[in-house]
Amino acid sequence: MLEIMNVTKALADESRVRMLAALEGGELCVCQLTELMELAPSTVSKHLSVLRGARLIESRKEGRWIYYRLSQKDAPELVTQALSWLTEAVRSQQRIEDDRQRLEEILKTDPEQLCRKQAQGFK
Amino acid sequence: MLEIMNVTKALADESRVRMLAALEGGELCVCQLTELMELAPSTVSKHLSVLRGARLIESRKEGRWIYYRLSQKDAPELVTQALSWLTEAVRSQQRIEDDRQRLEEILKTDPEQLCRKQAQGFK
DNA sequence: TTTATATTTCGTTATTTGGCAAAATATAAA
DNA sequence: TTTATATTTTGCCAAATAACGAAATATAAA
Image (cartoon, rainbow over the protein chains, first blue to last red):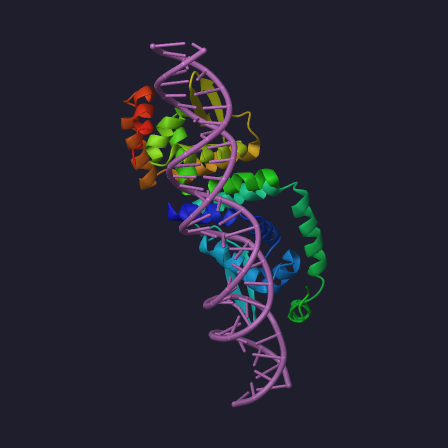
């Protein structure tokens, strides 16, 4: 039951849903997600840890960066099914489409510069 | 997006998940669910209104009783898919199995008596 | 009608959770 | 090594939410 509730609780926040949707396009590092979400890095980090706790995402460390991606087939059936449901549900949502478009712009800047910009406090 | 978040938030509470699982066996009135959940009637009622707000359940009034059931095919695709996911996820959960067993006992008493018992405050 | 009763709504309280900034950690560059 | 920097952890505050009892609503029985 804990496993199920970890998943449903993880999905019960719009920021986390948007992050999962963003990761459909492929792995992203924390600063890219931070830029997209317009939230404090610590907040994004917390959200990511909730998603990882539910096994909805996995991470990979590369130098100073940590890249997150949607969990693959090695995750529990329960989790991959939830991701399938979400992917389908979220398709055609304007908000998600807007994110996708903004993300495209964000990906044009390389991570180094993004993080530097954030360090100066973007808000 | 609101529709999606209504569903994910509705599923993000263990009591509500258990209620949905209980309704897989067919419609139940509030006092039956109250007996099963061991919560105050007002609390159960609130949970039901959240589930209905997400369109996960529907209701039918019969005399003094209101019966709730899982939403049928007329509900949004998004919702029926979520219910399918939950049903599958919840299968084999001990907690849900225990509920199912207790519910069987509860259904042996007719609703009239159940409600009367609750009126005296069972806890 | 009056009374009983099934459910919901309201008001309150305690807990959980999302947000941030600051401090801590970990890695790479100088 | 020292410094810079990407991310996480911690501590705090505000907002959301689950729980209850009491009051309100609605329906049936007397």
